[in-house]
Image (cartoon, rainbow, N blue to C red):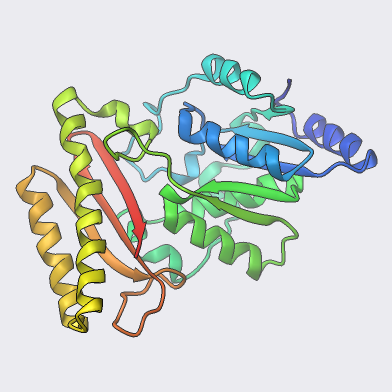
Amino acid sequence: MLQHQSIQRIRAQVRQWRVAGETLALVPTMGNLHRGHLHLVDVAKKNADRVVVSVFVNPLQFVPGTDFENYPRTLDHDIEKLVSHGIDAVFVPEVESLFANAVQSTTKVSVPELSNVLCGRFRPGHFDGVTTIVTKLFNIIQPDVAVFGEKDYQQLVIIKRMVADLSFATKVLGVETIRESGGLAMSSRNQYLTQDQHENAINLYKVLLGIVRRIKALRLSNALSDNELRCIEQQSLQYLSDLDFKPDYIQICDATRLTPATTSTKNMRVLAAAWLGEARLIDNLAV
């Protein structure tokens, strides 16, 4: 497996593959890799001849006062895992190489509306950081395919919109969430949980399952209404609070526009974000 830090070297490598007529997939990560990330790698390998994984803790997507400095950096272990999964190259750029000027004054890419709801309400500027760094990676590597997890569902929707709006040639693939045995979505931030909190965290997934089942039952009995959808959200928020979570939101959304779902919405997605101790957990399920 090749390891590159400089933009020039990864571009030179990509050119060699292109000359050979090979296709390329990119898996962008911030490192601290777990089984969910490695599943994305496996999907990428099935969809392209060559796979590049980027490892970069992006300062632009951290809200001031949050955990940028403390975000776990485990590059040596990440490299071992990527080698075992047979990827072709890992791109590990330094902040200075991606941001020629001061990070906070750099040119930014923003997807309006979608970036300001749900997690965007609680983490202002976060998704501008995501779309800016993904744009940079797409420009540097020019992948045929880019693979993202559905656990970060809002992020996935935003990147798909950005790709369509800016006419990128890259195809964006969303991959199902990988879960622990009890249903908790795998996340690098799960390590912030104590043992007791980890056992409690499974309840976030159970609440989402309960919402999905309730919506389906109401649909079958022809009793679903817009007011009932909002009541389900409020009751679920209260239930999480009673379980010692500090929920940011639970929202039943249009799966494409991320607007509040109504009874006429064909494709719904239930999204949630909640704090448990030091960990901010996010999860979602399709209805």
